[in-house]
Length: 638
Image 1 (cartoon, rainbow, N blue to C red):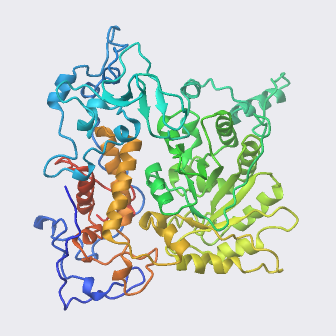
Image 2 (image 1 turned 90 degrees about the horizontal axis):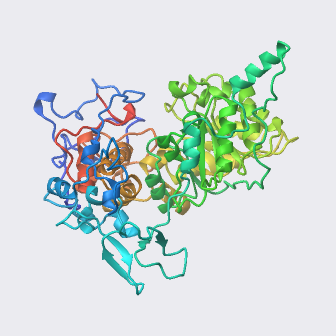
Image 3 (image 1 turned 135 degrees about the vertical axis):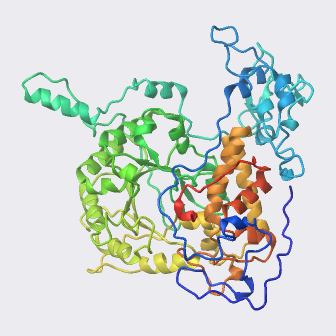
């Protein structure tokens, strides 16, 4: 399926804009219609017509759609055995239970759906675009790949691969047979001629993949931790009080490894992409690097789940080679959890992080009820033990992300930062202050007056100053100059130094305008075209298939994460359509907005059905029963 920027229907000349308010983007009158644009998905009449014509009876929700629709699981019997895909004998075939996966390639070939790039409603731009075939010379999904016609023998269902022959020339043939070498050669690792039969590899691997050995030790609770659990230390203390000889305990602040040289991160004059739950995934961060982001950070991960070896949680720590300065954000409620995780990170040769960000800002009840997130701001004893424990283990600095306080009327960030500075713990790289309280969550505007006050007056000159990075509502280069650059020049009440540094820490602004780093660095408002934005979405789709897989499950995941991102992207109104430039973070597009082309109009739609329509341009037709609701209720109306 192709997508072109065909001209949108001409708006009616007498269309008048709705009364301006502070929460609605002021758009030029020629882009406002009286009814829903015809290029958008039209809603059935029995649902009351267009749900965008009036918002009087609809109120935005808050929180998460916990019961949102999910993709049905794919049965094991419908998946091909990976050993058979590789052309090897299955090690479980002759066992008592047998293999639960399908071995009949011809049967799977007969029932195989057409590639997502084929058919009248297929995404034809993806033809011959299997990311694994193009970059690795081999697709491990074989017949299950939804772009597999490039590398599947359509007569037998066998998977093909690019290998080298006796002369060292690249050839296309069947995978290495059993007994032959299955080594993978990287074109940039060795200048030696690859062995015959070796599969060529053209991709640099994603980093921060936990070893199988460590995963098994964590899952079996056999990892050789030095730091004891908090309840183990309490038990030892009680036994000692009873006069019993308690075994020597190791406190949460005992180092597990010899001290290593620690390199602090210079955040000054950098664009830093804040950790973003769900949407701040690895493919998205690759997009942000393309648009000029200097520093990236993985999604918030829970130490409790990481210490259990949970694969889905460790996946949040994965790092792409393009992320040259990368951090991980960790949430926990106990010092021993932070310290134990630091031991794992420091011991693993496969894990490379430039800084660890402590989460003291997550407002979710699920996190705060465990003593983590914003709740940890109120537990200074545990916070101090956590910092001391990690920084005696980690070779990288630790940053502390916090909010102004628990509620708006009683901010505590200035007291907390002063106390952390007085603890004089070596290795605290920076404070990151979100200008809202825990109870505010993401409502109202960020309090930059308070952020500036904290930067000017919270730290003492008797100790080493810790840089402060402000965060909240940066949505344009003028916001960056107004909220950060001007405030950086201010001084404290006694004329002392201002610890607020010029760093553009971007959160929701990067989700809605991924090209925001370019705008900030080039000091301009970029009127980016719909075609350019579509190319950006194509890049995300490629990165998503490469990251989550090109089989049906990988396509489903890529589509879901794409739709979650579109639930933010639609809030952006192109600069050329604005009556007042720039658009503000808390402003939303008006109803019945018509863009300068059909594609731009679809991208402006608030309707999930139009987001699904965009996803079909990129990933092919969705099933007839497909449904989508954004994870965050604030992105949808009921």
